[in-house]
Image (cartoon, rainbow, N blue to C red):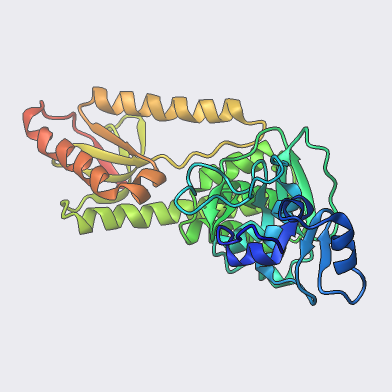
Length: 344
């Protein structure tokens, strides 16, 4: 195109370029218009974004084109792709993040359509940007951009945010349930993070979303219980009694526990709370209930270890060490009060 070398551009950036980039390479507007004439060698894929070959764009080209269209304009002549070795110092596409179904596909979801089947690609931009949806780019404005994750070199919304943006457009209850279930089952994220994003997007007033969230939370608890079972056996902890209720003899119910070691009076409780829209008070009440139960049990000499599903997933060995320490410390404590242990 011009004497300026293009070695700093990846292969896709030799095929998709903005008009500003082409001008910085010495290509005049008249020349661009000539190349983009019907039947010509180039084509305008989005306003100000040119595909430098005839024929349909690839999925990768469409993704880069959408980001080029949505990204905040840089100074003329500044490449949109960082130089090798500078990937972590300058984002390739400032103020533009792929989200929705395209982002989930990039994250490796199997329940989403392939990129070639998507008519539009969702892209997040700051709320104050004056940019309209057009062609294959669907622009979503947001008060605050999420911190993107780099997937195949593209800025992509984290899974919980991408899920919320995808679910906002879906009316098929089955499709919503499949997406939420895969997010948790495949280990992409924890249920609480998903519910938090759905809550912020004000989607928890839709019945089909609420139903899917209920399934999601049940799925998340089942997975957390499996991980707790795995933690005990992989890290060689003594067998507890699983899923039990404690009561004082002839007295009140003390609460349910996920695992309990009667000889050492050590209990493990999974914290699988998730925020729900309009239920902040309920969430606070549930936490108060957790705290009350813990205080009551500890007054009786029972050590309670609270574990979140995220900690079980990300640092199982560390959580096993916490439980092991509590079991070993039991020998130095006064004996706990006598309690009745019943199956839950």
